[in-house]
Amino acid sequence: MQRRDILRLGAALAAVPFIRPAFAQTPAPRWTTAAAPTVARQELYPEVLDGRLYVAGGLLTPNTGYSAHFESYDPATDAWTRLATLPEARHHIALAATGGLIYGVGGFSGGFPNWRAQASAYVYDPRANRWRDSTPIPYPTAEGVFAAIAERLYLVGGRVRAHDDARHFNDHADTARSLVFNPANGRWSAIADAPTARNSAAAAVIGGRLFVVGGRQAIKQADGSLRQVNVAQLEVYDPRTDRWSQRAPMPQAQGGLAAAAHGGRLYVFGGEQWVPEQKVFANAWVYEPASDRWSALPPLPTPRHGLGAAVIGNRIHVVGGGLRVGGDQASAVHEVLVLPDAQTQS
Image (cartoon, one colour):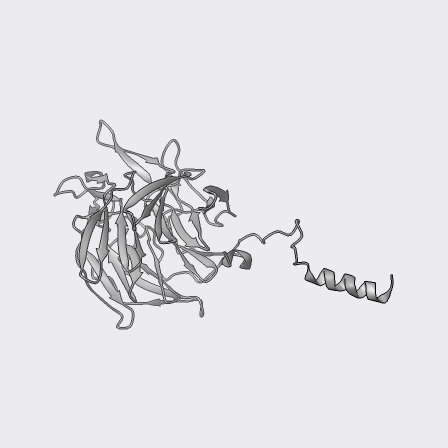
């Protein structure tokens, strides 16, 4: 081959776009650990604001104890900081952030079995390290999901008092009722009910829509006891249309689980099951909305339920939770799912 032919061939090859070899694969997500929070607790609904993770309240061990403790985690220093306590102790209090503030709503007061859903709502200003009262929820509720979308806060499902004097866990019922809160005017408004009444679900926001997954239904039996049955449904709420749609259910029904969104995907962790046998799950899953498909992730190193999950950077922080079914054996476990760089670009 003459020199001019070699030059022409080189120019032609340079013009061909690079094609990644078919055998190249994205590295798998991996688990690591981070500093433990200062209090072991479960039934957590954490939130992230300005790169810090916030956790409030929770159920202690034994499960007759519950907390007003509030703390934040800074990934830059791998350290937790105690902050101003909640105005009242709560477990299952749900957090969501908008406008530089963190809102904490609902939850139960009382140790098991004397749980009583509350309508109280509070707002935390991190600059002042201070809580103040916010507009109460129109009805007492706990174990629902709570998330911010476009400067509004959405509260879906959970358990509500079956009668005004409800003072026991069994005196509550699952609900599909859903609300939106406008911080600008301090008003709660009703939105379309969710398709499924459930408690102990998990949720995250993807593309301006709320994805609600898993959880369970407490079905009252003839003798007054409750049969707690997990559900696998994935339901999506679009605030632009005030409509719900149903997507592919989880491969395995898990209640008391945690969820977080990253890179347009839904990540789900842990949970528990009461029937047909009692167990705590290590299973973790990822859902791809474009294909309506679930895939398995590396399981939690420490199986637990009543845990919380939140995203900072390309890491999903999974905090706290109970190590066995029910309210006992709360933990201070803090495990982190590190997502590969290729996934952070999606």
